[in-house]
Image (tube, rainbow, N blue to C red; front, side, top):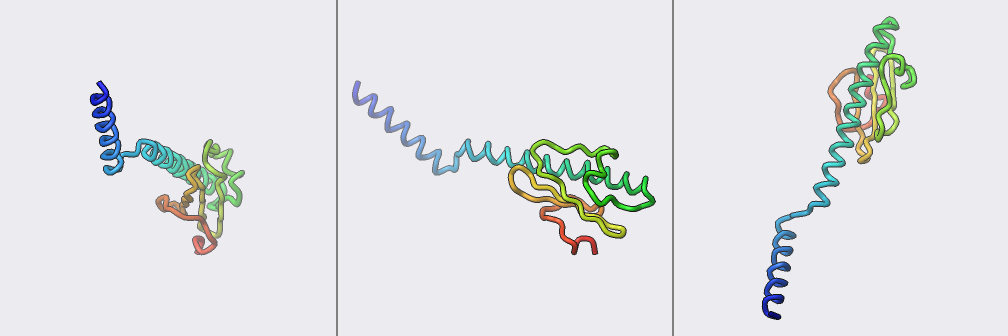
Length: 125
């Protein structure tokens, strides 16, 4: 009986060791999925904000808003879990950025695709 328990214990420890060597990490996988979901939420918030910025400009003789608060009446609603959006605008261009709950920053410059990074005045050039 003791040898069966010992053999079972050896098999169990060996299986755990092999799983560790193979990179099996269910907790890391869940955290990675959570980060991905948070990043997608930030990107989605930026896409919604872009539509509001463009609608604002159409309604205001092609002048872009100077504040995220200006976007509320044009359909932008803050997204839970996404840091506050930042808006920089200049003559004929704008840059929006947001930080996801995972800590990654994303930006959109004058309707270009969402990219990683934060806005700077150089983006308005």
